[in-house]
Amino acid sequence: MAKNSEDIFDSIMFRDTPGAPMSYDEDDAFSVLLSPENKTTPTRQKSKSPLIKRINSQRSHSTKKGTLPQIDESGFITSRSDSSALSALPPKVVVSLVIHEEATSQQEKKNDLDDIVSHVKIEGTAHAQLVSSNAGENPPFQLKVFDPDYPADDKFVLNKNFIIEEEQALDGSGIKRLVVPKKVIGQIQLASWERTVVKRFMPVLLQSKVIRTAKNSNRCMVAIQLRSNLNNKGSLKALCATVAVPPTVIGTSLEIKQGEGTFDDLKRIITWTLKELPVGKSLMFGFEVDILAALPPEDVPKFPILIRCRSTDDTISSVEVNLEKMQGHPATLVVNTYASFRLLHRLPS
Image 1: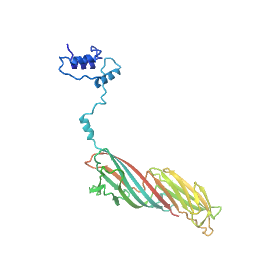
Image 2: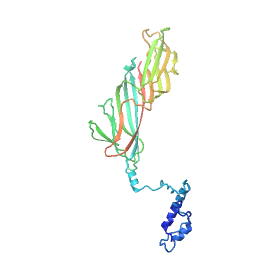
Image 3: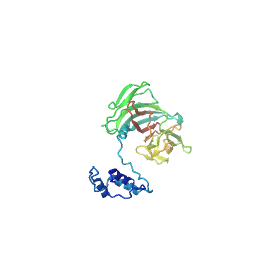
Image 4: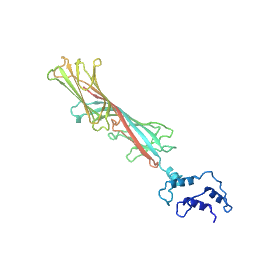
Protein backbone atom coordinates (compact mmCIF):
# COMPACT_ATOMS: atom_id res chain seq x y z
CA MET A 1 0.00 0.00 0.00
CA ALA A 2 1.39 3.40 -1.04
CA LYS A 3 1.98 6.04 1.59
CA ASN A 4 0.33 9.46 1.38
CA SER A 5 1.33 12.74 3.09
CA GLU A 6 -0.86 12.04 6.15
CA ASP A 7 0.84 8.66 6.69
CA ILE A 8 4.24 10.37 6.61
CA PHE A 9 3.13 12.98 9.15
CA ASP A 10 1.75 10.22 11.41
CA SER A 11 5.01 8.32 11.16
CA ILE A 12 6.85 11.44 12.39
CA MET A 13 4.47 12.27 15.23
CA PHE A 14 4.05 8.73 16.55
CA ARG A 15 7.48 7.18 15.92
CA ASP A 16 7.80 6.45 19.65
CA THR A 17 4.38 4.84 19.76
CA PRO A 18 4.46 1.03 19.87
CA GLY A 19 3.96 -0.37 16.40
CA ALA A 20 4.94 2.88 14.67
CA PRO A 21 7.98 3.12 12.36
CA MET A 22 11.14 3.70 14.41
CA SER A 23 13.02 5.51 11.64
CA TYR A 24 12.22 7.89 8.87
CA ASP A 25 14.11 8.41 5.63
CA GLU A 26 13.59 11.94 4.41
CA ASP A 27 14.63 11.03 0.84
CA ASP A 28 12.16 8.16 0.83
CA ALA A 29 9.44 10.47 2.04
CA PHE A 30 9.97 12.88 -0.82
CA SER A 31 10.07 10.01 -3.32
CA VAL A 32 6.66 8.95 -2.08
CA LEU A 33 5.32 12.50 -2.25
CA LEU A 34 6.55 12.77 -5.85
CA SER A 35 5.07 9.45 -6.92
CA PRO A 36 2.36 9.48 -9.65
CA GLU A 37 -0.24 8.46 -7.10
CA ASN A 38 0.31 11.73 -5.24
CA LYS A 39 -1.16 14.64 -7.17
CA THR A 40 0.65 17.33 -5.13
CA THR A 41 4.21 18.31 -6.11
CA PRO A 42 5.83 20.16 -3.18
CA THR A 43 9.23 21.84 -3.37
CA ARG A 44 11.91 19.85 -1.63
CA GLN A 45 13.68 21.66 1.22
CA LYS A 46 17.39 21.24 1.86
CA SER A 47 16.91 21.19 5.61
CA LYS A 48 14.25 19.87 7.92
CA SER A 49 11.19 22.02 8.56
CA PRO A 50 10.98 24.01 11.81
CA LEU A 51 8.17 21.73 12.98
CA ILE A 52 10.33 18.59 12.52
CA LYS A 53 13.27 20.23 14.30
CA ARG A 54 11.02 21.36 17.12
CA ILE A 55 9.48 17.91 17.60
CA ASN A 56 12.87 16.19 17.48
CA SER A 57 14.21 18.65 20.06
CA GLN A 58 11.23 17.99 22.34
CA ARG A 59 11.64 14.25 21.78
CA SER A 60 15.33 14.30 22.69
CA HIS A 61 14.40 15.74 26.11
CA SER A 62 11.68 13.17 26.73
CA THR A 63 12.47 10.95 29.69
CA LYS A 64 9.72 8.40 29.23
CA LYS A 65 9.69 6.17 26.16
CA GLY A 66 6.38 5.83 24.37
CA THR A 67 4.99 9.24 25.45
CA LEU A 68 4.09 12.05 23.09
CA PRO A 69 6.53 15.02 23.00
CA GLN A 70 5.27 18.15 24.81
CA ILE A 71 5.24 21.08 22.37
CA ASP A 72 6.10 24.51 23.78
CA GLU A 73 3.34 26.96 22.81
CA SER A 74 4.94 30.06 24.32
CA GLY A 75 6.13 31.24 20.93
CA PHE A 76 2.78 30.88 19.23
CA ILE A 77 1.14 34.01 17.86
CA THR A 78 -1.61 35.54 20.06
CA SER A 79 -5.04 35.22 18.56
CA ARG A 80 -6.88 38.24 17.27
CA SER A 81 -9.45 38.03 20.04
CA ASP A 82 -6.70 38.13 22.73
CA SER A 83 -5.01 41.07 21.01
CA SER A 84 -8.29 42.97 20.89
CA ALA A 85 -8.89 42.27 24.57
CA LEU A 86 -5.48 43.72 25.49
CA SER A 87 -6.07 46.85 23.45
CA ALA A 88 -9.46 47.34 25.12
CA LEU A 89 -7.93 47.63 28.61
CA PRO A 90 -8.09 51.14 30.16
CA PRO A 91 -4.83 53.10 29.95
CA LYS A 92 -2.53 53.22 32.97
CA VAL A 93 -1.57 56.74 34.02
CA VAL A 94 1.16 57.42 36.59
CA VAL A 95 1.08 60.94 38.07
CA SER A 96 3.95 62.43 40.05
CA LEU A 97 2.37 65.10 42.26
CA VAL A 98 4.82 67.55 43.90
CA ILE A 99 3.57 69.88 46.65
CA HIS A 100 6.05 72.45 47.97
CA GLU A 101 5.67 75.31 50.45
CA GLU A 102 7.86 78.24 51.51
CA ALA A 103 6.97 79.51 54.98
CA THR A 104 7.97 82.13 57.54
CA SER A 105 6.64 82.00 61.07
CA GLN A 106 6.90 83.73 64.41
CA GLN A 107 6.27 81.77 67.54
CA GLU A 108 4.62 83.25 70.59
CA LYS A 109 6.86 83.03 73.61
CA LYS A 110 5.24 80.67 76.11
CA ASN A 111 6.67 78.14 78.53
CA ASP A 112 4.09 75.39 78.01
CA LEU A 113 4.57 73.50 74.74
CA ASP A 114 0.86 72.70 74.56
CA ASP A 115 -0.01 76.40 74.52
CA ILE A 116 2.51 77.46 71.88
CA VAL A 117 1.05 78.96 68.70
CA SER A 118 2.76 80.51 65.69
CA HIS A 119 1.71 83.10 63.15
CA VAL A 120 2.59 81.67 59.75
CA LYS A 121 2.72 83.00 56.20
CA ILE A 122 2.76 80.27 53.56
CA GLU A 123 3.29 80.28 49.81
CA GLY A 124 2.61 76.93 48.18
CA THR A 125 2.59 75.33 44.74
CA ALA A 126 1.43 72.02 43.29
CA HIS A 127 3.06 70.56 40.17
CA ALA A 128 2.29 67.34 38.32
CA GLN A 129 3.79 65.16 35.62
CA LEU A 130 1.74 62.56 33.74
CA VAL A 131 2.97 59.39 32.06
CA SER A 132 0.27 57.42 30.20
CA SER A 133 0.31 54.05 28.43
CA ASN A 134 -2.03 55.52 25.80
CA ALA A 135 0.20 56.80 23.02
CA GLY A 136 -2.58 58.92 21.54
CA GLU A 137 -3.92 61.02 24.42
CA ASN A 138 -4.07 61.46 28.18
CA PRO A 139 -7.46 60.85 29.79
CA PRO A 140 -8.93 63.78 31.80
CA PHE A 141 -9.02 63.69 35.58
CA GLN A 142 -10.94 65.39 38.34
CA LEU A 143 -8.81 67.76 40.43
CA LYS A 144 -9.62 68.96 43.92
CA VAL A 145 -7.54 71.50 45.87
CA PHE A 146 -8.79 72.32 49.37
CA ASP A 147 -7.77 73.11 52.94
CA PRO A 148 -9.65 71.00 55.53
CA ASP A 149 -8.57 73.38 58.31
CA TYR A 150 -10.10 76.34 56.43
CA PRO A 151 -12.84 74.82 54.21
CA ALA A 152 -14.38 78.21 53.41
CA ASP A 153 -11.09 79.54 52.04
CA ASP A 154 -10.93 78.50 48.39
CA LYS A 155 -8.57 81.20 47.15
CA PHE A 156 -6.40 78.93 45.03
CA VAL A 157 -4.88 80.14 41.78
CA LEU A 158 -5.45 77.41 39.18
CA ASN A 159 -3.59 76.98 35.92
CA LYS A 160 -6.30 77.72 33.34
CA ASN A 161 -4.17 76.25 30.55
CA PHE A 162 -4.90 72.75 31.85
CA ILE A 163 -7.75 73.09 34.35
CA ILE A 164 -11.38 73.63 33.36
CA GLU A 165 -14.01 74.35 36.02
CA GLU A 166 -17.27 72.61 35.21
CA GLU A 167 -20.64 72.00 36.86
CA GLN A 168 -21.22 72.16 40.60
CA ALA A 169 -20.58 69.10 42.75
CA LEU A 170 -22.98 67.88 45.43
CA ASP A 171 -21.17 69.86 48.12
CA GLY A 172 -21.53 73.07 46.11
CA SER A 173 -17.91 73.25 45.01
CA GLY A 174 -16.97 73.41 41.36
CA ILE A 175 -15.73 70.24 39.68
CA LYS A 176 -12.31 70.94 38.21
CA ARG A 177 -11.31 68.97 35.14
CA LEU A 178 -7.59 68.46 34.46
CA VAL A 179 -6.71 67.97 30.79
CA VAL A 180 -3.04 67.60 29.83
CA PRO A 181 -2.32 67.27 26.07
CA LYS A 182 -0.03 64.42 25.06
CA LYS A 183 2.48 66.84 23.57
CA VAL A 184 3.11 68.42 26.98
CA ILE A 185 6.23 66.83 28.48
CA GLY A 186 7.57 67.37 31.98
CA GLN A 187 6.05 69.04 35.03
CA ILE A 188 3.20 71.50 34.85
CA GLN A 189 1.97 73.79 37.62
CA LEU A 190 -1.53 72.91 38.74
CA ALA A 191 -2.17 75.49 41.45
CA SER A 192 -0.61 78.00 43.83
CA TRP A 193 -1.82 79.49 47.10
CA GLU A 194 -0.97 81.91 49.88
CA ARG A 195 -2.00 81.46 53.47
CA THR A 196 -1.65 83.57 56.61
CA VAL A 197 -2.72 81.34 59.45
CA VAL A 198 -2.33 80.77 63.17
CA LYS A 199 -0.93 77.30 63.65
CA ARG A 200 -0.75 75.55 66.96
CA PHE A 201 1.84 72.88 66.23
CA MET A 202 4.68 73.70 63.85
CA PRO A 203 7.02 71.03 62.47
CA VAL A 204 9.73 72.46 64.71
CA LEU A 205 9.16 73.46 68.35
CA LEU A 206 11.47 75.95 70.05
CA GLN A 207 11.97 76.97 73.67
CA SER A 208 14.57 79.11 75.44
CA LYS A 209 15.36 80.16 78.97
CA VAL A 210 17.65 82.93 80.28
CA ILE A 211 18.66 83.20 83.95
CA ARG A 212 21.35 84.97 85.93
CA THR A 213 23.86 82.61 87.56
CA ALA A 214 23.72 82.10 91.28
CA LYS A 215 27.44 82.59 91.80
CA ASN A 216 27.72 85.72 89.68
CA SER A 217 24.63 87.85 89.12
CA ASN A 218 26.44 89.73 86.36
CA ARG A 219 26.63 86.55 84.26
CA CYS A 220 23.72 84.77 82.60
CA MET A 221 23.10 81.28 81.28
CA VAL A 222 21.03 80.65 78.13
CA ALA A 223 19.46 77.25 77.32
CA ILE A 224 17.75 76.52 73.99
CA GLN A 225 15.75 73.40 73.16
CA LEU A 226 14.89 72.45 69.59
CA ARG A 227 12.43 69.62 68.95
CA SER A 228 11.03 67.87 65.88
CA ASN A 229 7.25 67.48 66.07
CA LEU A 230 6.02 63.95 66.71
CA ASN A 231 3.38 64.41 64.01
CA ASN A 232 5.96 64.97 61.30
CA LYS A 233 6.06 62.30 58.60
CA GLY A 234 9.82 62.62 58.20
CA SER A 235 12.89 64.16 59.77
CA LEU A 236 13.90 67.80 59.57
CA LYS A 237 16.97 68.46 57.45
CA ALA A 238 19.63 71.14 57.09
CA LEU A 239 18.85 72.81 60.41
CA CYS A 240 20.54 76.07 61.30
CA ALA A 241 19.89 77.81 64.63
CA THR A 242 21.08 81.40 64.98
CA VAL A 243 21.03 83.47 68.17
CA ALA A 244 21.52 87.23 68.12
CA VAL A 245 23.71 88.52 70.94
CA PRO A 246 22.34 91.86 72.26
CA PRO A 247 24.48 94.89 73.14
CA THR A 248 23.56 94.48 76.81
CA VAL A 249 26.14 91.68 77.18
CA ILE A 250 29.92 91.55 76.75
CA GLY A 251 30.62 89.57 73.58
CA THR A 252 34.23 88.73 74.44
CA SER A 253 33.07 86.88 77.58
CA LEU A 254 30.75 84.52 75.72
CA GLU A 255 31.36 80.77 76.17
CA ILE A 256 29.44 78.04 74.33
CA LYS A 257 28.65 75.33 76.89
CA GLN A 258 26.48 72.91 74.94
CA GLY A 259 26.43 72.03 71.24
CA GLU A 260 29.11 72.60 68.65
CA GLY A 261 28.31 76.20 67.80
CA THR A 262 30.40 79.10 66.56
CA PHE A 263 30.33 82.72 67.68
CA ASP A 264 30.93 85.57 65.21
CA ASP A 265 32.09 88.49 67.33
CA LEU A 266 31.81 90.92 64.42
CA LYS A 267 28.21 90.03 63.57
CA ARG A 268 27.43 89.16 67.19
CA ILE A 269 25.62 85.92 66.34
CA ILE A 270 25.97 82.33 67.50
CA THR A 271 25.26 79.58 64.97
CA TRP A 272 24.60 75.86 65.39
CA THR A 273 24.09 73.55 62.40
CA LEU A 274 22.67 70.05 62.17
CA LYS A 275 22.24 67.81 59.13
CA GLU A 276 19.13 66.02 60.35
CA LEU A 277 16.78 65.86 63.34
CA PRO A 278 14.61 62.70 63.42
CA VAL A 279 10.91 62.77 64.26
CA GLY A 280 10.28 63.43 67.95
CA LYS A 281 13.94 64.01 68.79
CA SER A 282 15.19 67.11 70.58
CA LEU A 283 18.46 69.00 70.76
CA MET A 284 19.89 71.31 73.44
CA PHE A 285 22.13 74.33 72.94
CA GLY A 286 23.62 76.50 75.66
CA PHE A 287 26.03 79.30 76.40
CA GLU A 288 27.05 81.78 79.11
CA VAL A 289 27.92 85.47 78.82
CA ASP A 290 28.62 88.46 81.12
CA ILE A 291 25.98 91.16 81.45
CA LEU A 292 26.73 94.87 81.40
CA ALA A 293 26.38 96.50 84.80
CA ALA A 294 24.00 99.07 83.32
CA LEU A 295 21.26 96.43 83.02
CA PRO A 296 18.99 96.43 86.11
CA PRO A 297 19.48 93.33 88.31
CA GLU A 298 15.85 92.27 87.90
CA ASP A 299 16.18 92.16 84.12
CA VAL A 300 17.85 89.60 81.87
CA PRO A 301 19.20 90.10 78.36
CA LYS A 302 17.00 89.15 75.41
CA PHE A 303 18.29 86.73 72.78
CA PRO A 304 16.16 86.42 69.61
CA ILE A 305 16.43 83.01 67.93
CA LEU A 306 16.05 82.16 64.24
CA ILE A 307 15.67 78.60 62.91
CA ARG A 308 16.06 77.53 59.27
CA CYS A 309 15.15 74.00 58.21
CA ARG A 310 13.58 72.00 55.42
CA SER A 311 11.72 68.75 54.91
CA THR A 312 11.17 66.36 52.01
CA ASP A 313 8.24 64.57 53.65
CA ASP A 314 5.85 67.23 54.99
CA THR A 315 4.13 70.52 54.28
CA ILE A 316 3.38 73.35 56.70
CA SER A 317 -0.27 73.93 55.80
CA SER A 318 -3.07 71.38 55.65
CA VAL A 319 -3.74 72.01 51.93
CA GLU A 320 -4.55 68.82 50.03
CA VAL A 321 -4.38 68.16 46.29
CA ASN A 322 -6.37 65.15 45.06
CA LEU A 323 -6.63 63.59 41.60
CA GLU A 324 -9.41 61.16 40.74
CA LYS A 325 -10.78 59.42 37.63
CA MET A 326 -13.45 61.25 35.66
CA GLN A 327 -16.75 59.46 35.11
CA GLY A 328 -16.93 58.11 31.57
CA HIS A 329 -13.13 58.06 31.17
CA PRO A 330 -11.87 54.69 32.42
CA ALA A 331 -8.22 54.60 33.45
CA THR A 332 -5.91 52.95 35.96
CA LEU A 333 -4.64 55.92 37.96
CA VAL A 334 -1.52 55.79 40.15
CA VAL A 335 -0.64 58.99 42.06
CA ASN A 336 2.75 59.35 43.75
CA THR A 337 2.73 62.40 46.03
CA TYR A 338 5.90 64.21 47.12
CA ALA A 339 5.67 66.90 49.83
CA SER A 340 8.34 69.39 50.92
CA PHE A 341 8.84 72.73 52.62
CA ARG A 342 11.43 75.30 53.63
CA LEU A 343 10.84 77.15 56.89
CA LEU A 344 12.19 80.29 58.54
CA HIS A 345 10.98 80.17 62.15
CA ARG A 346 11.49 82.96 64.69
CA LEU A 347 11.29 82.99 68.45
CA PRO A 348 11.29 86.61 69.61
CA SER A 349 13.27 87.73 72.63
